[in-house]
Image 1 (spheres, rainbow, N blue to C red):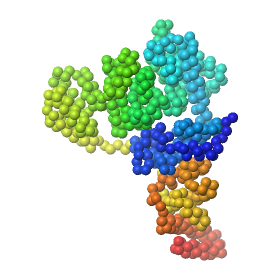
Image 2 (spheres, helix red, strand yellow):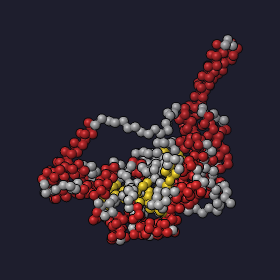
Image 3 (tube, one colour):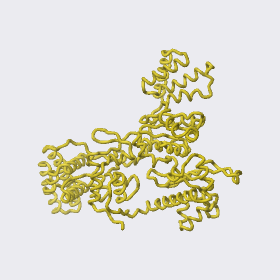
Image 4 (cartoon, rainbow, N blue to C red):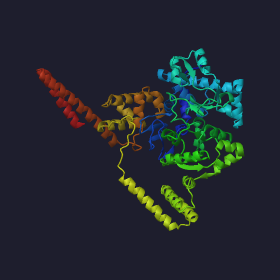
Length: 606
């Protein structure tokens, strides 16, 4: 019988966990001072603003404002409940749990997506069963075996087969009483004009497409040619349409399985197709990714950047594959944080074909040791369609590669390639250097002449400017969190903050300390129930202040707050005094005058 998690278990898992190690499996973190920085996984950004504080065991993004402890991170990122987050952390850190953890009821919104995911995962299991265990799937299984895929690999990736029955999945869905609305939202079916449904996928080898959690959110089906269907004109690959779960611009095939290995090895390998990723996996290279048959998108690059700073492009060796490599270098090259390399597969083969022709060891050797720099690739690629025995073509080629060389940052690398070009084309190194300098000047001149475009940045939660008084309130609460004596004095003196939220946070802090004795921020966040109060505590905890306070600092902070409180009270009394005067209530007006005089004296003494 599942049960709720005792507080003792929550505390034990959190105390045994280093938040940096957990978040580091999702975000590429680099040490910066005493904290770690990376690209925020909750919004798109170019400059890292996502900070993880190892000493406080919390995270905070200065861009979008999200923050919390290790449980909050997984809840936000994976859309799971608090108990599920505790269980996930325990699994990631290999901490045994003595109890079975139940999940909190999901919200209505997440419930709709859960139903869609459940439908996709049931469909994946059906297609996989048909492929592996039925006569209907025999031809598809034979095709995969011919392509070099083992049964173990097919099971690992849950590859399946959609039979040539246009209402196979429709009948299953109707038997399972799947609602018409859910069928329509899923993208697995096509609605006819008469309102009935047919299967979107048929006669296809089915590759499940997962999100980063490993949940099935769509499919890519490869058409299986058969003699009886030779007349049908079908696309080679058919992907799920855009749905609330699936966006092909965001998905990378195998990212869910490869993520941790990419983080460990510090690099990812980009392939053109799913079969290349699978071929690499069989060669024990488990850091392969593939996009959905289109050029890389900014969203996909952002996903990669969060886990690694190095990318190897290993597209097909044929002409379209090399053109795709050139495009990928251009797109990825705009991201200065990424270090790039390319692998050109010999004989115009793709990696999958190369594996079947030469075996595992040769593919491993090619991917690990057959790498070129982006410029070395471009030196070779620019020769395409040129006759270098022709003087005009030679000059065109040198002009093009000089444009590429001007983008190479390393002086050593530039010098190396200048030597190679000088030797190959019998041109002096000095003349090439002069040409390179002219190209650089031209590029700089073009940049100066270009109008400055104001980028339209997606709006993030606005950060309001804090008043002097509110800054003082936050700083005083920061000291209260870190120095028990200050908190105790404020409570004892019945100190009043100007803003109710800060007064409320002090009361929560005091009650927490009465129970726990020691202040642990990550645990305090669990203690707080309201998201707004948790966020306030995180924001305050990230204030940059000296390690210890002094009497003068505390006096100044309390004085700023007290004066502002009295000033606000004087304003209120003056407002009431004016109202009394308008109403002709002289007695009330006189009483308020006395109160204002007393408050003014207090303000001067404060």
